[in-house]
Image: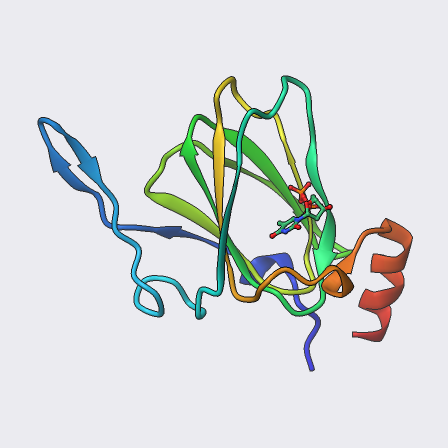
Length: 139
Ligand code: TYD
């Protein structure tokens, strides 16, 4: 199997239904999300300067959305890295399995919505970067 790499992670644009009284962005399972959504969670009240993430998943896909405010995501496949800035609620970053991610530079009041392909399972996490590098060599 090919190694999962950052070039297979893409920014997805969702529909924005605009009106003078506000916007709506609908997300429908398996329609405009490339996996079956099994879990939704959100990060909020992130203190200034805090960093989140710092792990990879062996078998979990996610779509990460800045539902309010902005933040950066560093994605890293062990060979290549890039920084993606999310700052609009109708765009999300699809992060495939086997990718190290770090979330940082949260703006004040930012809310990060995560759509995930599996329920929470601590055994699916790789939390040590050295362990991640070793995992990628065997992938
Ligand atoms: P973690 O995924 O490490 O957070 P982040 O990537 O945002 O830094 O999770 C932090 C803690 O919350 C950890 O103890 C596991 C727990 N947790 C759950 O119990 N369920 C969940 O769905 C998530 C995402 C985390």
